[in-house]
Image (cartoon, rainbow, N blue to C red; front, side):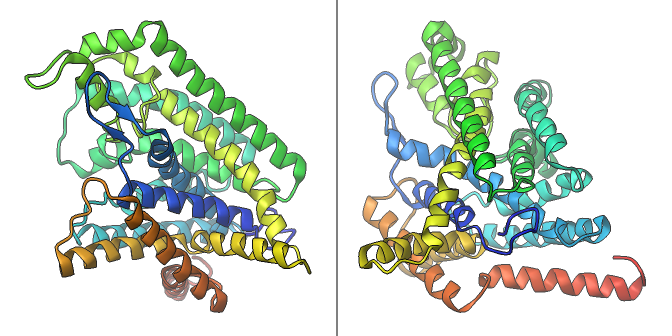
Length: 396
C-alpha cells in the first residue's frame, strides 16, 4: 500500500509488516499452542500466546480498513463505492467456500465482506470524521451488543450472527475497520503523523487495559464470579475463567461488569479500546522499520538484516492469499492424514506453517506485484465494473 495522499508511489513496507504480524498471530490462534489452560482456581494464562490469540485478529480488521483507501484513490465516489461493493461480494463468496471445507477455523472473510458493505456510506469521509465515528462506535457498540443479546435471541439467523452475536460481530468490530480507514487517509510517510499515531495508541492501550485490571482488582472480578456461579462440574471461579477466555466474539450476558473486562476476543470495552491502542502503537513502530528495510546498504550484515525484514513482510503483501492458503493446507493435511488441528498444537507445527507461508509469499512476491487471490479479485472487480459501464454508459 502506498501513502493515502497519493503523493508518493513508494510502497510502505511497514504496512506489510503490520499485516504480516497479524498473519503470524492468526497462525498462533489456528495452529499454535493454547493461550489458556484450565486448572484449579482461574487456570493458567500463557501471556505470550494470549497476546497473539486475541490482539492479532483485531489487526486484520484494522488492516482491512487500510484497503478501503485502495478503491477510494481512484477518484470519483461512484466507482470507488461500486468497487467496494464488488469486493465485499467476492469476499463473502470466498469466505463461504473456505467455510465449506469444514476446518476448525472460523473464517472471517464473509464477516469482512459485510464490514465493507457497512463502510460504503462513509467511504468518502476524511480522516477526522472517521476518527470520531470510530470512537463513538467503540464506546456505544459493546453495551448495545450486550443489551441486544439480553433481550433478543435469534440463534442460526445469519444477519443476527454477523451483526451482533457471531465470532466477529459488526457491532464491536466495525471500529477497527473505521479506524483503519481513518489512519489510511493520513500521510503515513510523515514522522509527525507516526508519532501522533504511536502516542495515541500507546496511551489508549495503557488506559484501557489498566482501567480494566484496576476494576477487576477492586471488586469486579469477585462480582463476576458471584454472577456466573458454579456449574455441576466447575466451581464459580473456574466457570468465570472459562467464560473470560472463551474467545467467542461476545461477552457473557450474566452481568454488565463483563464490559469493563479486557476478556480476549470478547468485544468488551477493554478488548475493543485496548485492541485499537495496540494497533496504533504497533503500526507506528513498524512503519519506520519498513523504511529502514528499503534502504540500500553495502554492509553484509545490514543488507542481510534488511532482506530478512523484507522477507518477513511478504505475507503481509498478499495477506488474503496467505489466509486462504493456510486454511486449504489445514483441510488438505486433515483429509490426507486424519490429523486434527483442534484445539491446540505444538510449537513445531506453528513454526512449520509460519516458515511455509513466509517462503511461499517471499517467492511469489519476487515475481508478482500482488498475491494470486488478490490479483484474481482485482481482475474480477475490474471486469464487473467494465460490464456495468457498458450496460449503463457514463456510470459505474
